[in-house]
Image (cartoon, rainbow, N blue to C red; front, side, top):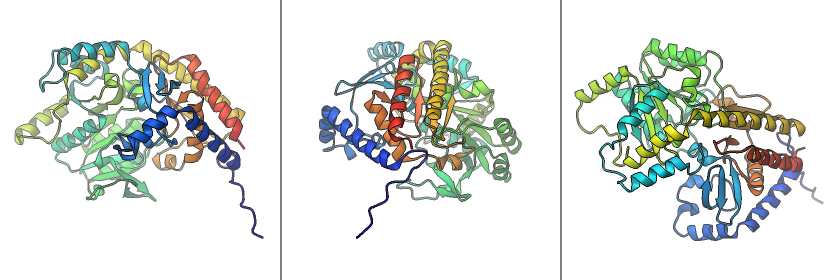
Length: 459
């Protein structure tokens, strides 16, 4: 007689057998509660690959995608009429809330006057002044996305310095930028797993080192071939990895010593405060990149730079006039500029950040209490309005350590359970954002939902 299969083992303080049964129940409940989403998903599969217009929309791990009817403030309503407290907020794209009234009004007014003309609108001078005042860099350009902005920064850094290479940190994410899709494995650079259709070896001109390792940074810079160090001030797309004391000061000193330019990508860490982590920590980058929420959710991004970089850009352009290979026809359109002005002046305010940061602190404390209640060896991390929990007893020091943390099945079950309880969190690394319209009741709903789910599955 064959032996009965062993029950699933406990992982990260979660009982495997209870998790499997819980996940099956939650998936069945999701399907039963959303017939209209199910019907739309079936219809969409006829013409959209995997039934979605962007393959990332399948990353939630749901039986079928959740189709959205409308979203306002911090509330998302699906096509089946179920309202959810939204802590994903478009993965930062709607960090200041869905459809903020000043942005909606600006878009409506500008749309009546024309949306794009490939010429600057009358609001361009004011928006430039607003960006310079807020982020302390004198020169700016607009792109459609932060990915486009990072591509431009990399290209211009190479043009200005005459150097071929860039340096990134293991596990960092800078959008759909080919140059940045290099990782470390056993201390050696590899192409990022899952990178499709790439036909040249990105490692020829991209160096990668661990975050918080200044010795490795210096070793990569010593030959004088690195044009740019591109980094998030806090690593955010592999879980949250905080900089150690002195890291940013050391990084800035090393880049100056070896003649490399420094770019700070604030696309996620704008949650730190009105001027991002750069202003909060007094960083002094040569380039500054910000996408996602800068136009209230409308596709747009900006990148700023110093006087010295601007001078080098003018010289490079004068030496090689003609098409630069950077930019797109719809970039810096009048609609985006109008939305950006409204965001900077009426939405992205000090008062908004005070609410966001204060409530995020409460969320972090309440999550820690729930994890302690269930005796789970997990940590909570936060930066400004951004909060995460990680399935680890200690915080990671770099991307390599962060990559070993987590469990897709456990995290997927919790995400689905929260969705069933009317709460949306981001579909990777358990990220939650507080918007200016998020309420204490929303936070309580999230915490209660997590507590309820953990009561079902904790070992």
